[in-house]
Amino acid sequence: MPKPAIYWFRADLRLSDLPGLVAASNAGPVIPVYILDDQLGDEWKFGGATRWWLHHSLDRLNKDLMARDGKLILRRGETTATLATLMQETGATQIYASRQYQPWAQQSEHELKDLAQGRGGDFKRYPGTLIFEPEEIKTGGGTPFKVFTPFWRACLKGRDPSQPLPIPTLSFSESMPKSLELEELGLLPTRPNWAEGWETLWCPGEAGAEDALQAFLASHVSDYGEGRDFPAQPNTSRLSPHLKFGEISPRQIWAAAQHLKHAEPATAASVDKFLAEIGWREFCNHLVAQFPAMPDRAFNSKFDHFPWGDNEEYLSAWQQGMTGYPIVDAGMRELWQTGFMHNRVRMVVASFLTKHLLTHWRHGEEWFWDCLLDADLASNACSWQWVGGSGADASPYFRIFNPIAQGEKFDKTGEYTRKWVPEIAELPDKYLHKPWEAPALTLEAAGVALGETYPQPIVDHKAARETALIAYANLRAQFSE
Image (cartoon, rainbow, N blue to C red; front, side):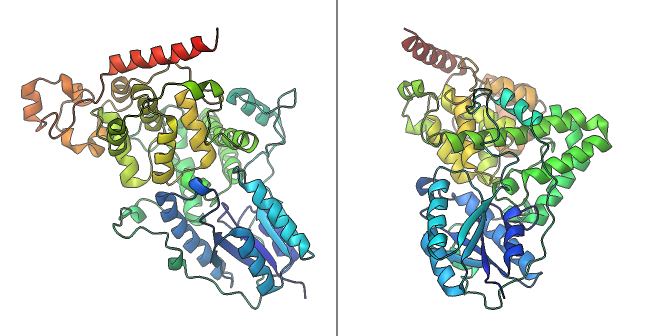
């Protein structure tokens, strides 16, 4: 009888379209393993919100395995040492996994290959996290792309993604090693339980991911092209947390979206726009795989000399959703209360932090990392640097989102803002996004006392914009001399 093979689950908590799991199942009985390594990634280990999702995703994966007479083995500790112990306990010599692209992943994979080969076996990694591997997509000169549009064009001109794989027929080792109980991992918040009610908002797991994809394609993708900019409307997929944990693969999303496009040609433009957002995720992961310092350092080294401010009161007001700019505050409160923020609003709050408050993008990156359910290292780092002006294909330095205009344009009736900033909900639409301009009688009638029930703006928009423009222009001048 063949020896059992370890399948090491990482950010791929699903059973379908998993090439590594197919290979492991073909090799013999499978031992499914997940290891919580609190040291892996150091400062970029799981944040609070992602730990909540991870708990429920692991629970769902274990139930899916149990339905096939298997079980997910949970361990906690340093990855290589833990897998070495499991190999010794089970007699397994082969380890299978999906490839990862974080800065620390390659070193970890090298260590595991040495470990397995030292025991007469091997460590084998397979694609499954991205549609295209970083080595596949290069410029004509053989270098990585640094601008999204030509990158995505090259992806679309390349090979067609193969069809997703079904769940393999799995057999499991007769003598499974011991496993921790899920609760022993301590992933859920308790004192206080700041995630109370989240289970009514989200459905982690492979089935939840498939349901979210089908619901989006059936009801909302046709409005995605323009509708995705309006935060009160359900026109985005909300698939990002599922992608973060690999409960669905981008190849599955691609296949389902292409099927819809061919079945309903009228949806083609919106489907392509949606797939371009999947492409942005690919672009970010390719960048971090090839420029591993990106989560920590400015991609454009000129920004090492940018005069970032250090105002703790500004940062705290931004984090708490108390800046006095309603659309910014709505976004930050949505984030805290749900673990999510609409993408248009993410750009607005990021621009406000980096350009109105001249606060280093790393502070925003770290806050999002702890608060977002979909906190993906590559997308988070690249998107913050894009807004801040220091990243690849960055937003122009003079592009500073006007939080008043953004609110008036994309939340014209105030449905989104009123939901998350209820203390100003009674203001007329005319003043909702600029309450400081409302007459005293209007404020009184709405029950708003600026500076008491809702803050005055912590900075003046026009003055902050001019200050930012001067700072960015000075940086450009400094490096053009």
